[in-house]
Length: 401
Image (cartoon, rainbow, N blue to C red; front, side):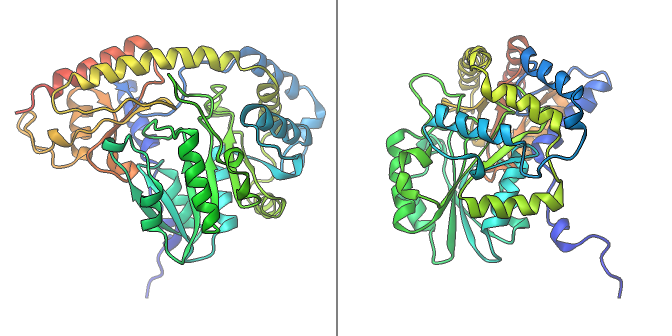
């Protein structure tokens, strides 16, 4: 009997669909094709100069040439605690903060620390592609709570309660949302948080897009709005989106001290400390003002309105207005089964593939986010490319027969 070369646990993990689409688009561009990519979720802005300079100075500091505490630089942990109070009104101390190698490590370590095999996690769909894999690796069971465009991709307490069982341990709560841009009102956040308290659930809340809301939408941290959650809430965040630092790989996990200590133990064996130079850059980011993100938010807001208007002008496409993050999530269900140059895509994944090949536009199909029949398009790219890309989409999809 031949043993499998790869473990069943790792074989079950899917490649990040968003990164895969972005990589294919970049490969096509490198081959000379004028592909416009709406796939990757990263700002098109450079990291602010003062943050870069802090990293340069850190490179010269011998202290940062050595190992530092696995859980993060003490001064950065304190700065994250201070920033959390400043930005969301949630008071924690440095011992409740773990600095991680990007937000993804924080996601994985949260679930690895909280879940035993068979524990269920309620996940609102559409969801970010990494959540299912992190839950699966931790031995947990994902239970989807499916939303659609008719509710603005928001889940209510009734839906959550219908999905809850005696095995439910965690509610994953995300607002603003990737991939939909949905933002829960403070009143909705409070209602969901009180429901979690009533049923003695943990809440893991991903707040990476906290500073990216538009119009009348406002970010509300469930940890602040529902203090009754007490020590059963874990907050995930990082510098990637707010400060255009996706490549620097600095995130954090905030939680009760026993959870943070356990997650820190895991990290001490997995990666040790986050790069000290990146931590120094993150320290400059979180202790600085928010002027850089204000400029980015203005640009994203302009692009958001342009993209939504153009998408809704395409026959067969329905795009609710996203109120946060930097993604639009239009329904393309009405286009499935239509003919495009002799081909009839039955799924949004097939349609996305045809669009990339024929129109040279990269979008991520809804299959990646748990809801087939949709596309995710990031509007974190230049205005001219955005207009050109959606115009190509409109021209190509307008040929549906």
